[in-house]
Length: 81
Image (cartoon, rainbow, N blue to C red; front, top):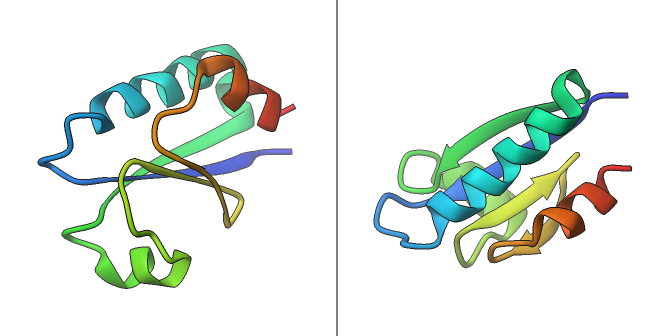
């Protein structure tokens, strides 16, 4: 099973780079079991609105908002197992 992870970010967010790094560390560990997409909320407001994203970073896993803010790597990995 491949998990689809969408990381909603903003270019001005100081926490977003850390959230992206944590998602990429999970990708390194799980490799082809996850598909990662970064979504800039300034460029794709329609998708952000569809999920009700009100803050960044927001991490959506398989169409469900799972984290608002930067999760710990262990918390992210536990959601993916």
